[in-house]
Length: 153
Image 1: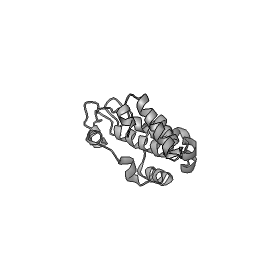
Image 2 (image 1 turned 90 degrees about the vertical axis):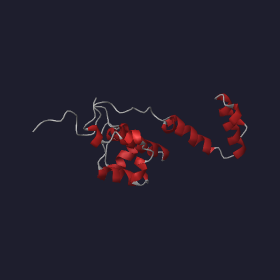
Image 3 (image 1 turned 45 degrees about the vertical axis):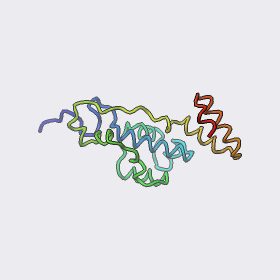
Image 4 (image 1 turned 60 degrees about the vertical axis):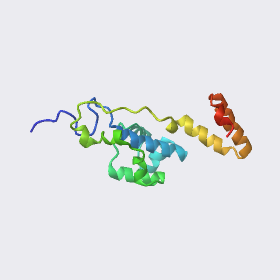
């Protein structure tokens, strides 16, 4: 029995977490934050520690099918939610492709739309109940960002 050149556990050739696992974890984190849940709260619901939730969200630990089912239920989404927005670059990083991989898959930088700061900002923005004030905040943000042409919309 010969040992494989690369791990059959879906990691990249360098041993980093598989980009698909990172994507699923990022989607998990996004949904958790949108629901206003902390890692500890989600962990308690699932019978896990917050450290395990952290590992899932970073893609450091892979999420099994039954666990993903429980996570989807706890977060109020269908399982396919976790796989939305996977492009061809991530499809190429599936474990069946990683077994024969000789080079690292393209690493995607973190999406600013899923950052904690962005989510908090959007939530605060929509808590502004007066539509006129909300519009002025939007205009101010556009001007500060150097995009005054958007401020007049």
